[in-house]
Amino acid sequence: MPNKDEVAGKADQIKGKVKQAVGRATDNPDLEDEGTVDEAGGEVREGFGTAKRKVGEAVKDLGNAIKR
Image (cartoon, rainbow, N blue to C red):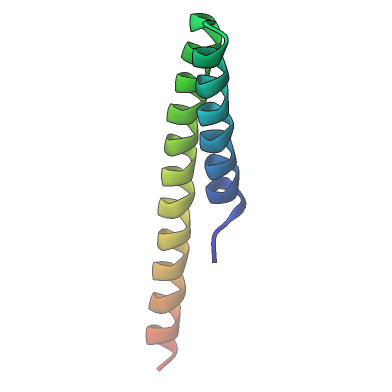
């Protein structure tokens, strides 16, 4: 199940793609660039969230293995 960082990262990526599209449609390179930055930041945040979730799952699995 995705955590809040993964969800927020996906949302930032979508927001970035929308800004890029609007920037291209309105011939606004600053908005297009801002969208690119938002999308990249979202990818990083989603990746961080995924890594954090996987570490948590590994710790939980280790704890379960120790209990056995």
